Length: 256
Image 1 (cartoon, rainbow, N blue to C red):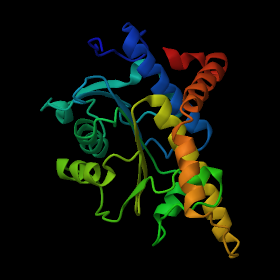
Image 2 (cartoon, rainbow, N blue to C red):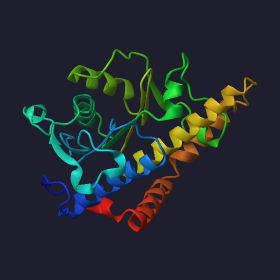
Image 3 (cartoon, one colour):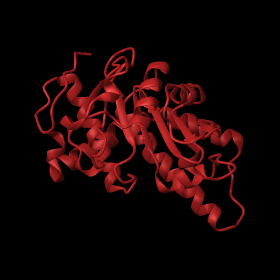
Image 4 (cartoon, rainbow, N blue to C red):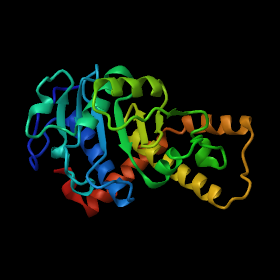
């Protein structure tokens, strides 16, 4: 991947490889804001731009998802000892989580962390298992790591390392008492996974709210459906392309 240069707000992006990363990530922010999955000006997405994961793009502190532009994304370096001492320092909890996971997990090229309504409700249950009760919930059958060790805000490298160890080679970390984190090789895959995880959590929470017995699929059916989802990778590419197309028409300034 080509060298990335830090850009100032509103100026056009020059590097063609990083252009795609910036635009896909920015489109993800904008779309999740439309879906109401943002929380104030909190939560962060990032994407690694170096093979070792030490350099990565991430949204700056304090800008609403609905207003982020491609050139707003900050290029950060995990080895930069002064990163947190600058006036434009990133959010500390995002820094300690994202900088460590990108380095420790090769598949975690893109990280998305949100506190969406239904996934967070699932994270608040004593048993946060995603049950195989429909096609979407089966996508995550035996594929979600659950963190039961929430101890407050993530304000140290140790917390990032702890979360990386729990996530392992999985794509979804359901963070008990907190929210959800998705890790994937591409922005499109992370975006699609986050979207479907929230949809799946919504289905489970709504089904549980009826108080009636759940129609839980057999292990073999759930396992096969999850594998079918794993082989359905074009969906995430098409999903991102359509989101970009809609934003190109309705919010073209996201590309700036």
